Length: 453
Ligand code: PLA
Image (tube, rainbow, N blue to C red; front, top):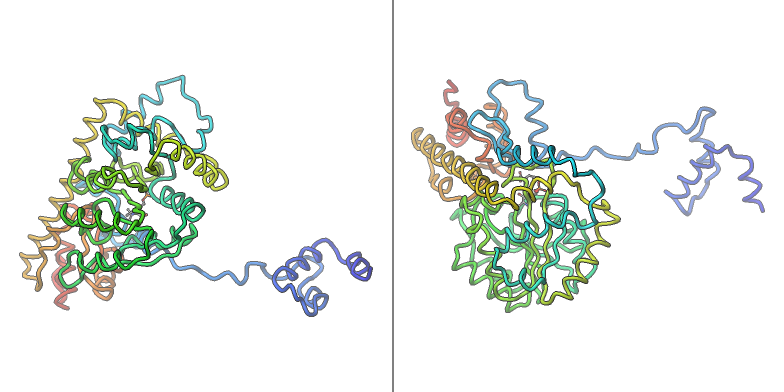
């Protein structure tokens, strides 16, 4: 009764604030006093978001934010892994243009909602690309595939599905790994741990450490593996090491989750880059794969990718797919249509497919040639240290070994932007910018101010 009486004396904005205070401090010692102090005739004083702190920029995408603010004409962005031409320009593949022209000309197409799991043709073709035409899992129809929002969205949907339906909540990530993995998996409801992966002394794989950690993980753990072109290190297991890992993971009854963000970018061959995944499918065991078409088709902003879950039987895959829909529907309802239509057009047409593989190989080759040019330029300057890892590393990135201070120096003095762990995107480099980068590396390593001309 007394509450009712008090309520009647407050204006609606006072009541809203009262509800907020109640929400923030349910025990609300002197509620009426607080409300009176905080409210004026014109409404509440200050912002209800006053306590919200400034968040740091993303460690990778924030590099581009800083780069964009720099007015220097010599600046170079080697932060995010985005392919650039020799002229330093972003590129749209010719096959993508052709596919888009076809889509535009086809008047029978609509912009209706896609089903929750996306474009059916895209899903079939995407799964075929990673598993191979003759894949037993595909022939036996025991793969559930959902089109998701690029690689990130596919990982996130996979994480949430596992948190809901898998008995083990532990996911082991390589140390180091793509920084976003940690947040994707913990936000998806899993507990994140790491396994040893990279040895800074050898600048290679710590295979022994990796095996020990995966062996020591509780049976049934989720093991996140980069299908190829490990980010950020550029270090992949050899085929023999993959075989050892496969046996270990299967013996321990762990569940592998592959992140395939660079198929075709490592070797230039789509099939070679899928070998690790295919070897795990060939043994008949279960696994998950997140695919991205951001890099290999240059469809970064189209957000096109897929999650495939390989199951033991067709009926199980059907159930799994039905549950994926329950994860996706309240998250973003259904995926966008345009990017998936481009990919389906290219993968479904033998001529376009053949042309794509040529363009993809050209991108991979340009990256490899940047490795050689950078290595030679560093050699030519007599920079101390062994730089052969620049040649040996695979994929879009080079994990240079430069430390945080050296990176900060290169950004400040040479306007070269890269992630603070010393990773550089080789795909952002060109013949014109290689000498500038080599000068900066030389200066950072020797502590000298090398000529910038
Ligand atoms: N997985 C790995 C290993 C990646 O490196 C990236 C992208 C993704 C997934 C996700 O890509 P997508 O969602 O765009 O398909 N890594 C980039 C970009 C290229 C980024 O950080 O978002 C990178 O610079 O590391």
